[in-house]
Image 1 (cartoon, rainbow, N blue to C red):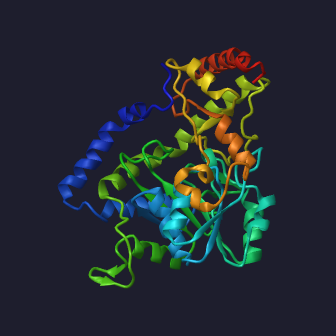
Image 2: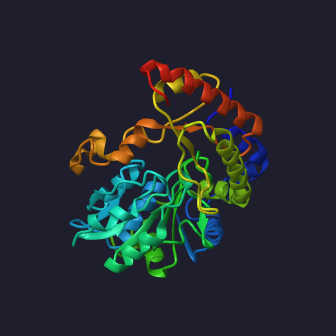
Image 3: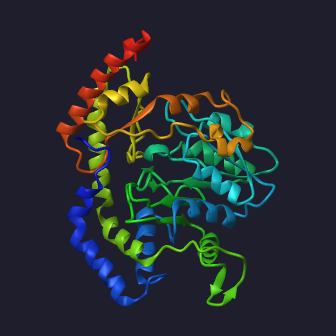
Length: 374
């Protein structure tokens, strides 16, 4: 069996350090906002190339607090994409704002800058480009449009830890960056966690205050806030893992390059080749017709997943967005056709080769079911 994700391999290697870090927290008796939080924030800020990082309870809380810190409020509009996890849109609604969606590019699968300006209205306050699967959105034109209209750019970098372009890393390109440390992420906690990064001290200060009930200091609440703090054990776990992230990313890139070579000429589409080092391959996905049949033929020997089978605008919970099927054809096609293949540090060449061999065979066998090629 080739798993879709192998966290056990990672944790087995780091187990003595992780256990020691947890022991230190337990023995200290400081479980909330202690030294491990502070030290992780400093290290993660340096990793991203930002002066400020604020550790929070999840990627969702990072997005919510980033929007509030940016001044988004009821009546405002925030632009993002339908090809994302629902948390991106949920955070916009938590802030009381309205999400306006823009389709993604068919080549990169990230926000289409050519469609962006048409979605801007007098109520637009911010743009949230999503670095889908670990690939940076096309930030240069997005930032140019945002600056021309006086809009805040909040990077949804939940899948893009360490992705970089022109010497700048995800989370340090827009005004604010938002990260998730969900266990399966490229940098994952042993539970929930997230972070907000920024170059602006004022934004960092407000996020820091809002995550802890709006307190400037203990018992002095300057505004209504939230219990969005990262617990100390998760900060300690992340502090152990962070020094390994660059090497893990290189292993992901090597596996992705082998996938690329093996699948070249297969007829299966992947996202366009990355620009330099702007992709960290949280997910390696291909587009296939008859996805269910292909996936069934791969199981149980090869683990796969789907990101995301229903775009946000077609989710029943988000019918209030007011969109219907056909509104975003590229996102809808990706939802119907993308299949995520095994991807994790330590995935071997032999495993990649086996996945590709089985995948090509499954596509050939599935195609005749509907009398068409994949």
